[in-house]
Length: 182
Picture 1 (cartoon, one colour):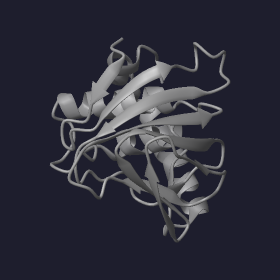
Picture 2: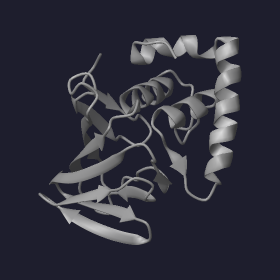
Picture 3: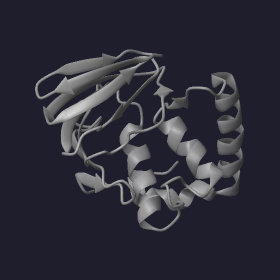
Protein backbone atom coordinates (compact mmCIF):
# COMPACT_ATOMS: atom_id res chain seq x y z
CA UNK A 1 0.00 0.00 0.00
CA UNK A 2 1.09 3.55 -0.68
CA UNK A 3 2.74 5.33 2.20
CA UNK A 4 1.11 8.69 1.28
CA UNK A 5 -2.56 9.25 0.48
CA UNK A 6 -4.19 12.46 -0.75
CA UNK A 7 -7.60 13.95 -0.03
CA UNK A 8 -8.58 14.98 -3.55
CA UNK A 9 -11.13 17.51 -2.25
CA UNK A 10 -8.94 19.45 0.21
CA UNK A 11 -5.46 18.59 -1.07
CA UNK A 12 -4.46 17.36 2.39
CA UNK A 13 -1.79 14.64 2.26
CA UNK A 14 -1.27 12.04 4.96
CA UNK A 15 1.93 10.00 5.12
CA UNK A 16 1.99 6.95 7.35
CA UNK A 17 5.39 7.22 9.09
CA UNK A 18 4.95 4.42 11.67
CA UNK A 19 1.88 2.22 11.37
CA UNK A 20 0.12 0.22 14.07
CA UNK A 21 1.76 -2.86 12.54
CA UNK A 22 5.22 -1.25 12.80
CA UNK A 23 4.69 -0.38 16.49
CA UNK A 24 2.99 -3.65 17.54
CA UNK A 25 -0.26 -1.74 18.10
CA UNK A 26 1.21 0.83 20.48
CA UNK A 27 0.66 3.94 18.32
CA UNK A 28 0.33 5.34 14.81
CA UNK A 29 2.50 8.22 13.61
CA UNK A 30 1.36 10.20 10.58
CA UNK A 31 2.61 13.31 8.86
CA UNK A 32 0.00 15.68 7.48
CA UNK A 33 0.57 18.34 4.83
CA UNK A 34 -2.30 20.82 4.94
CA UNK A 35 -2.59 23.43 2.17
CA UNK A 36 -3.00 27.16 2.90
CA UNK A 37 -6.39 27.91 4.49
CA UNK A 38 -6.97 24.15 4.78
CA UNK A 39 -9.64 22.98 7.15
CA UNK A 40 -9.48 19.90 9.33
CA UNK A 41 -12.40 17.78 10.53
CA UNK A 42 -15.36 19.20 12.46
CA UNK A 43 -14.99 19.49 16.23
CA UNK A 44 -14.91 15.90 17.50
CA UNK A 45 -13.72 13.60 20.27
CA UNK A 46 -12.01 10.24 20.58
CA UNK A 47 -12.58 8.17 23.69
CA UNK A 48 -10.17 5.34 22.87
CA UNK A 49 -6.99 7.26 21.96
CA UNK A 50 -5.25 10.58 22.43
CA UNK A 51 -3.59 12.64 19.72
CA UNK A 52 -0.33 14.52 19.99
CA UNK A 53 0.27 17.21 17.36
CA UNK A 54 3.77 18.46 16.51
CA UNK A 55 4.40 21.13 13.89
CA UNK A 56 7.25 20.36 11.48
CA UNK A 57 6.91 23.49 9.30
CA UNK A 58 4.47 26.38 9.28
CA UNK A 59 1.73 27.35 11.71
CA UNK A 60 -1.15 25.15 12.84
CA UNK A 61 -4.22 26.13 14.83
CA UNK A 62 -5.37 23.35 17.18
CA UNK A 63 -8.64 23.87 18.99
CA UNK A 64 -8.99 22.02 22.31
CA UNK A 65 -12.43 22.54 23.78
CA UNK A 66 -13.08 26.25 23.32
CA UNK A 67 -9.41 27.26 23.35
CA UNK A 68 -7.40 27.83 20.18
CA UNK A 69 -3.68 27.07 20.29
CA UNK A 70 -1.40 28.54 17.63
CA UNK A 71 1.50 26.11 17.16
CA UNK A 72 4.66 26.95 15.22
CA UNK A 73 7.56 24.77 14.13
CA UNK A 74 8.73 22.52 16.95
CA UNK A 75 5.72 23.09 19.21
CA UNK A 76 3.45 20.30 20.44
CA UNK A 77 -0.04 19.97 21.81
CA UNK A 78 -1.98 16.96 23.13
CA UNK A 79 -5.69 16.31 22.66
CA UNK A 80 -6.45 14.06 25.63
CA UNK A 81 -9.17 11.41 25.61
CA UNK A 82 -12.71 12.78 25.34
CA UNK A 83 -11.50 16.34 24.65
CA UNK A 84 -13.33 18.11 21.79
CA UNK A 85 -10.71 19.12 19.23
CA UNK A 86 -9.95 20.00 15.63
CA UNK A 87 -7.19 21.62 13.61
CA UNK A 88 -6.93 24.09 10.75
CA UNK A 89 -4.42 26.05 8.73
CA UNK A 90 -5.56 29.66 8.99
CA UNK A 91 -2.59 30.98 7.04
CA UNK A 92 -1.54 31.65 3.45
CA UNK A 93 1.25 29.06 3.48
CA UNK A 94 1.16 25.26 3.89
CA UNK A 95 1.69 23.59 7.23
CA UNK A 96 3.29 20.20 7.86
CA UNK A 97 2.67 18.49 11.17
CA UNK A 98 2.85 15.06 12.74
CA UNK A 99 0.16 13.37 14.75
CA UNK A 100 0.79 10.48 17.09
CA UNK A 101 -2.33 8.47 17.96
CA UNK A 102 -1.95 6.36 21.10
CA UNK A 103 -3.20 3.64 20.82
CA UNK A 104 -3.73 3.69 17.05
CA UNK A 105 -7.35 2.51 16.73
CA UNK A 106 -8.08 1.62 13.06
CA UNK A 107 -7.33 5.16 11.96
CA UNK A 108 -5.06 4.17 9.05
CA UNK A 109 -7.69 1.85 7.58
CA UNK A 110 -10.40 4.52 7.93
CA UNK A 111 -8.32 7.11 6.08
CA UNK A 112 -7.43 4.66 3.31
CA UNK A 113 -11.11 3.77 2.87
CA UNK A 114 -12.26 7.40 2.92
CA UNK A 115 -9.66 8.65 0.44
CA UNK A 116 -10.18 5.57 -1.75
CA UNK A 117 -13.91 6.30 -1.91
CA UNK A 118 -13.05 9.87 -2.97
CA UNK A 119 -10.77 8.64 -5.73
CA UNK A 120 -13.53 6.34 -7.00
CA UNK A 121 -16.15 9.13 -7.06
CA UNK A 122 -18.15 7.67 -4.15
CA UNK A 123 -18.20 10.90 -2.12
CA UNK A 124 -20.01 14.20 -2.60
CA UNK A 125 -18.35 17.49 -3.61
CA UNK A 126 -17.31 18.06 0.03
CA UNK A 127 -15.69 14.63 0.31
CA UNK A 128 -18.41 13.04 2.45
CA UNK A 129 -19.20 9.42 1.55
CA UNK A 130 -22.46 9.13 -0.38
CA UNK A 131 -23.28 5.93 1.53
CA UNK A 132 -24.32 6.25 5.17
CA UNK A 133 -22.94 2.73 5.69
CA UNK A 134 -19.50 3.94 4.57
CA UNK A 135 -19.67 7.04 6.81
CA UNK A 136 -20.67 4.94 9.83
CA UNK A 137 -17.79 2.51 9.30
CA UNK A 138 -15.16 5.22 8.72
CA UNK A 139 -16.13 7.18 11.84
CA UNK A 140 -16.32 4.02 13.94
CA UNK A 141 -12.93 2.72 12.75
CA UNK A 142 -11.29 6.01 13.68
CA UNK A 143 -13.25 6.33 16.93
CA UNK A 144 -14.52 9.76 15.88
CA UNK A 145 -17.62 11.19 17.53
CA UNK A 146 -18.91 14.56 16.32
CA UNK A 147 -19.48 17.20 19.00
CA UNK A 148 -23.05 18.50 19.14
CA UNK A 149 -24.72 15.16 18.37
CA UNK A 150 -25.40 12.99 21.42
CA UNK A 151 -22.59 10.44 21.63
CA UNK A 152 -24.90 7.60 22.66
CA UNK A 153 -27.06 8.30 19.60
CA UNK A 154 -24.06 8.23 17.24
CA UNK A 155 -22.85 4.94 18.69
CA UNK A 156 -26.31 3.38 18.59
CA UNK A 157 -27.10 4.44 15.02
CA UNK A 158 -23.66 3.62 13.68
CA UNK A 159 -23.84 0.20 15.34
CA UNK A 160 -27.18 -0.55 13.69
CA UNK A 161 -26.04 0.73 10.30
CA UNK A 162 -22.77 -1.25 10.41
CA UNK A 163 -24.52 -4.45 11.50
CA UNK A 164 -27.01 -4.18 8.63
CA UNK A 165 -24.31 -3.30 6.10
CA UNK A 166 -22.22 -6.31 7.14
CA UNK A 167 -25.23 -8.63 6.72
CA UNK A 168 -25.72 -7.24 3.21
CA UNK A 169 -22.02 -7.65 2.37
CA UNK A 170 -21.61 -3.95 1.63
CA UNK A 171 -18.15 -3.73 3.19
CA UNK A 172 -16.57 -6.45 1.03
CA UNK A 173 -15.91 -3.79 -1.63
CA UNK A 174 -13.78 -1.76 0.82
CA UNK A 175 -11.08 -4.40 1.14
CA UNK A 176 -9.33 -2.99 -1.93
CA UNK A 177 -8.68 0.29 -0.10
CA UNK A 178 -7.34 -1.01 3.20
CA UNK A 179 -6.14 -4.52 2.32
CA UNK A 180 -8.43 -6.24 4.80
CA UNK A 181 -12.03 -7.27 5.31
CA UNK A 182 -14.49 -5.33 7.45
